[in-house]
Length: 231
Image (cartoon, rainbow, N blue to C red; front, side, top):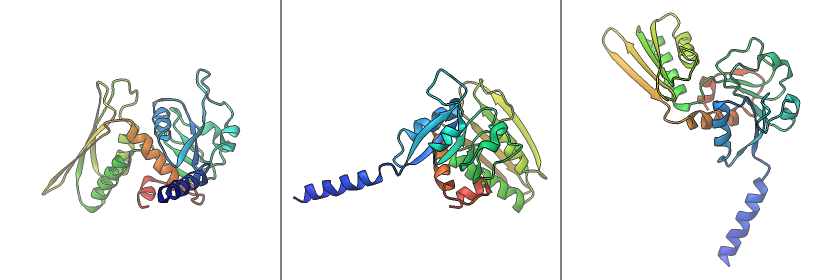
């Protein structure tokens, strides 16, 4: 009898939460978009509402208005940014591309060119170091041989955050490395070495979904990873 009661309650709770999943629309259809979609397939509180892409060989729409009608929030995973159509965006937006928008829509926006939670914690740590003491920085940026940009968007963002410090950066494109960043901070009396490596692209997908959940319901503003990680 108790087991039946528990099962009935669980059924009611399960049915009651159906349809309450956060509906996430994806802009883009590359590798980053794929890892977000993979993460959504195993998420208990978020689901894929659709994909915006000009590709015709996948199940995607070319109608951004339709995608927004079906979505609570959008994640831009496009390789060249969605800047040209920014004025058509009316839903909260996570910008996961490393390309910068020239014009931002008037919606809640989280600029997150690297979705990894671990990397963003490293970024905050290095940024803090540069403000607290006099350090020189050496950054090594290693990615797979197919990656076109060097340094990566992640490395460029870090260099920008360390503006005013003496920073040297080297980039290497070898093998199938998802993403490895090494940072050495050299001070007068100490040297600090920090390394972050993504062992799977899933780190980016799960991080971006977490970020989208955080952004949903926020007032119109432009947020950064620092805002997200203060949650």
